[in-house]
Every structure is written in C-alpha cells, then in structure tokens.
Length: 93
Image (tube, rainbow, N blue to C red):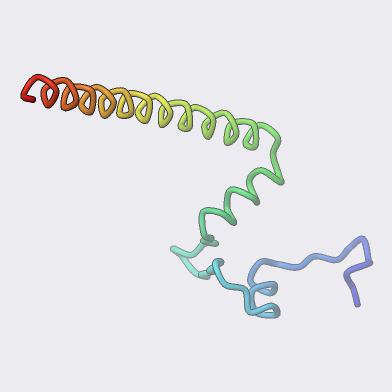
C-alpha cells in the first residue's frame, strides 16, 4: 500500500522476509552483509551502474573470444589428427 509513495523504502531483509526470496541471504551483525547468487548480483550491479554493466559486457566478450580461440585450435588439431589417420590407413592398404 505504501509502494506508490515517494518516501517508500523497502530494505533487502524486509523484501526477503515478505517474498520468501531465494538466492539472497542477509546477515546482521559485526560480520554481516548481503550475499546473493552471482546472477542476481550481476543484474543488480548492472542496474545501478552503467560503467559496471559495460565492464561486464566487455569482459564476457573477451572470455567468449578466448573460448573461440581454444575451440578453433582444438578443432584444427582434431582435423589434423583425422587426416593423419586417413593418410596412414591409405598407406597401409
């Protein structure tokens, strides 16, 4: 009922209690804090800061490029191995 008021504030711990949220843990006290699943944390970080969102996107693209390089090398290696067997089998026959 208060959500439409400009002064409405809902803390994370209240939200977790009222919605039975999973993936977020709130600990109070000296060594407390709010902990979330990495997907939730990334979404939250990208929602509150454009620089973080851009960093996340560029880092993801860099990792995918590295993965493609590894797959490309592996595919070339497998192709060379198959060609080697084809040639040696042909020579044996």
